[in-house]
Image (cartoon, rainbow, N blue to C red):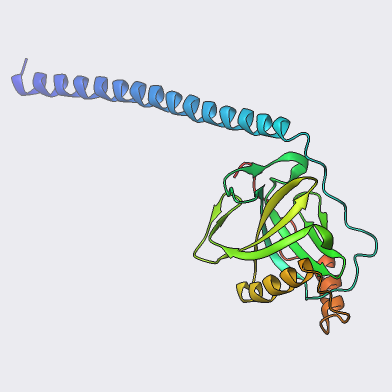
Length: 218
């Protein structure tokens, strides 16, 4: 037998054996990775459910009234990032679906704030329950550049909550902070901003991100 031929056959056999061995290791590590990822998601789901049970005593937020009142600003279209206990941006509130992130339309009237979410039930914050509005860079488990979030603090039962929003046009946040703080202080303008009623109606009727939904545990 030719020595060079025999050497070639042995090298080919070794290469084939190495390939089979590599595939075995690949499948093994892939399986381990899938199990680890699955385990992490199970733990997250259980923690989410446990948090919901712990918050079971939190009352449900009010539904939007049939007559929400006179609009004070044009509807703010953007995203809702969730609520946390006031002052604790990572302590997410998941009870009553408040942890579900969603595309949102915000309408501020002389009666309060209507939060119309497309991925979950909307809710209403009466003017008497509004505490303040401000800019934040971290809220609702979300971090953005300095001042990138509009945060509204309000009372739900005996608990103070922070809700984080970001408008599609961030420049509108200034007017919202001013208007919410004035309303919370009891200053209720008698006249609506021109065109606000039409904008509010249009925003409720059609939303460019109406089918956009983020997972509840993001």
